[in-house]
Image (tube, rainbow, N blue to C red; front, side):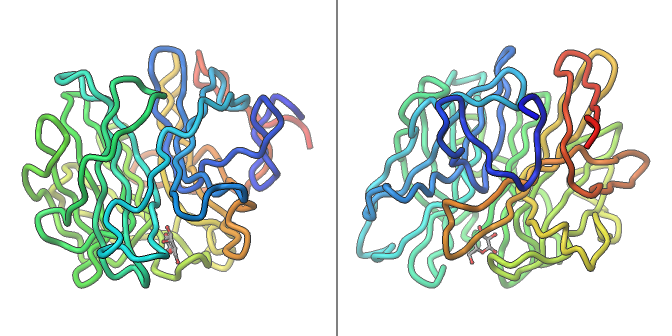
Length: 309
Ligand code: GAL
């Protein structure tokens, strides 16, 4: 079924290599979608961390654009040998005409808990590491990002002592402007979408690479108040053996689809982790992840269909 997205199946790029974009995000520019994520290829240099980038017009066929980040430990005293770079998220800043990437950067035991900021002149070019910091001084592990229509950008991050936070980025996106909301719920793998007058935030509980029942809440404003958190899928399925990571909104001429982009991690072979992408049932404050199976989307109309099994 070459024209469908089949969650959990091995997914190859147009050159026949496994797509390496874990914990990632999709950014749309013109008619093209760009997928960014952790490149966990086995042949990667052990002293570098990588972000892979892919391009597509249909969300099914992805052409590899290259490793947009190939970073050596930027501060070995700080981040130590087993440092990590996870969950890259990319936005375009229309005021500075730069692409800005945030990611979680950390050291052994995830004790450093910072964000890394990168900048690029082109969407699939080299992203230059600028610096790392703790947003407004808070611990930051898993991150998510959200860009509003007015160009304001928001960072969501898990702050272990308190829950998770939403902060607004400065106009150039390179630092934090102010705090928006602290949500006293310990969640990671954070995704945020605005759909028909409501914000929906989705995240997983803190069980490392192992899946758990992901939950969501809604609010009319990013500042809250946020609703109670509820399961996005039947809890015993543990989000169909996946962890949330990103919510992708596709606005078509007839329908608006919101796609759950999750990871089915394989911790012993991270390169072999799988992608669980599924259109969500969303509206009126409810969000449900259907049982994963193959699907297609007409990008122009936004219509989702399910080819016969
Ligand atoms: C998860 C997190 C992943 C990775 C993993 C390590 O909770 O979402 O991005 O950090 O822990 O155990």
